[in-house]
Structures are given as structure tokens and as C-alpha cells.
Image 1: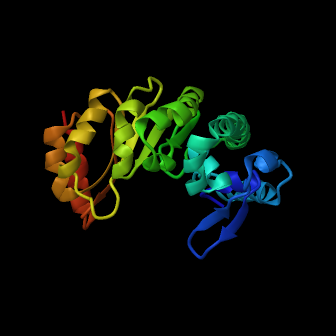
Image 2 (image 1 turned 135 degrees about the vertical axis):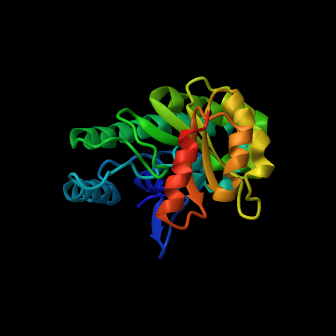
Amino acid sequence: MGHEIFSAWCGCTYHFGETTTWTEPVILDWEKDFDKGTLDLEHPLLFAMNRYIDCLLELGKESFIVGHTDYHPGGDHLAALRDPANLCIDLLENPEYVKLALEKSYKEYFYIYERFYKKLKNAGMPITSWLPGVSKEKYFIVSCDFSYMIGREMFNEFFLPGIMEECKYLDHSIYHLDGIGALRHLDTVLDIKELGAVQWVCGAGNEGYARWVPVYQKIQAKRKGVYLDIHIRELDLVFETLKPDGVWFHHISGIKDKEMLDSVVKRIEKWR
């Protein structure tokens, strides 16, 4: 009950695969179906999520951290309600419906986030999610994977306002920038004052820290945190090209034993 579960609570049929989940669109015609894409507080999968979180909280006492699931609000939520291809056409032919649906859905999303935030806080948990930053305050991953399919003007007109509201609502945020086609929106995202950090995901076949140094430097130049997944052999280049402030080493591959791990930690501690 992760990816697109919020869209399921708002009317989409939800399918479970062996390793993933997906939805079916519920709004086939804006005029006829607009209200079908509405948060259902009595939805059985919302009850299931509540029960699931309660069980994890009971099991996790003093053992592990329980966090938010992957809600995917905003543009990705509308793409689930409507289907991505249809949403692309809607931006041209039904822009007012898109804006109305976004406005309504964000009110629903903030209600859901607040609900689970209070549940986690009341249980004494810090706040985290699928990117495991940890905070005592409101933290989440802001994203719009659908933005890969559209240009800057449409992104700025339709989806940027909601993303800015998310960042204002949260105390700590990291933007999930997914795919080379989404890089066209980086400058816009970096201008969001309240945004805390950026996770750049280059996509399969485009890996390697060296080729994306200018992207990471641009992020740092705007005083945003940088999320890194690197290989140990890339560590020296990171030290040469970035400043330590705000760098989050989420994962360093190629570490073979504890001795090597301790050495890497010492090298990072000395980074100035």
C-alpha cells in the first residue's frame, strides 16, 4: 500500500502485483466524473492503512521507526485519476478542470498527511518516509514525475503552485527529480524558497556521479541540500567538486567490510 495509494483512497481501482501496485483511472469524463475523484474517508484501504500503521507502531516500540507511506499527490495524483496521456491532452483542452481538481486534491492530501503525522507523533515516532530522512517535524518527499512529459510553461502554470504549497506546509522537504526529461524544471524547483533539498535520479543507463557534477553544483549554489547515491571510487571527486554542507550520503556502494566502512566515515568526517 504505497505508490498511488492516495489515489486509491480517492476512487481509483487499486491493483497489487508481486512487487508493486498500480491504479486504474476513475475520471473518464471531467463533467460526468469529477466527483468520483474524491477522498473517501470510509475507504477499506484507508482503514487497512490505519490498521497496518497501528500494528507497525506496536511492533516497533524501541525497535524501529515507522513512517509515512508514498502518497504521490499533485500532478501524479491527477495522472492516476485521469491517465497520464489523457492528462496531457487536458492541459490543452480542459485546463480549468485540471486546476479545480488540483485545488481540491491538495486539501484532501494535507488532511491525510496531518492525520498520519499526528498518529506517528502521538506514538513518539520521528517523521520519515520512503526517502529515509528523519525529522521531529513535518517532513516529506515532494515530487511530480508527470512533469517529465510537459514543458516549463505548463509545469509552472499547473503544478508549481501546488508544489510550492507543499514546501510551505512542510518543515523539511526534498524534491524527487526523476529522469533526464525532468531536468528542464530544475531551475524552477530550486527557486522555491522553502524547499530544503533535491534528490536527482538520472535513470537507468545514465549512472555515474562525474557526468552530473554540474547538476549537483547548481543545487548547492542555490543553498539546497544534495542527496547522493555513489560508489566508493567516486568519493574523492565528490570532495573535489562539492562543499560538505548539506550533502546527504544516502548510500555508498563498494564498501566490503567494517574496516573499509570505518575508513570512509573518517574521510567524510575530515571533509572541510
